[in-house]
Image (cartoon, helix red, strand yellow):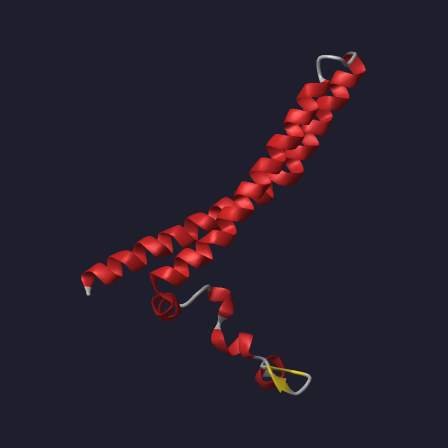
Length: 116
């Protein structure tokens, strides 16, 4: 059974052997170095920034329509704001969390370099 799990269509499946689900091994993060970790930080920071800007843009557009709307229009605008937040905010928070993890790796790599 183990051979079936370790191969897909007869070809070896390296993800099972390397334990990718456990995260980046400590040796790999040391090999990348601080510059590599800073480059890895750019993606999550950019993602969080873009999603934050999109949320603010959509919310500002909805708020701009609020003064000229009647009561039913105001309720639908509030519902639109809720939909925007419920849909996009979890993804923005995930990007922020991912960026925090990479930043912690950068800090740990800097401390490891200082100890050597």
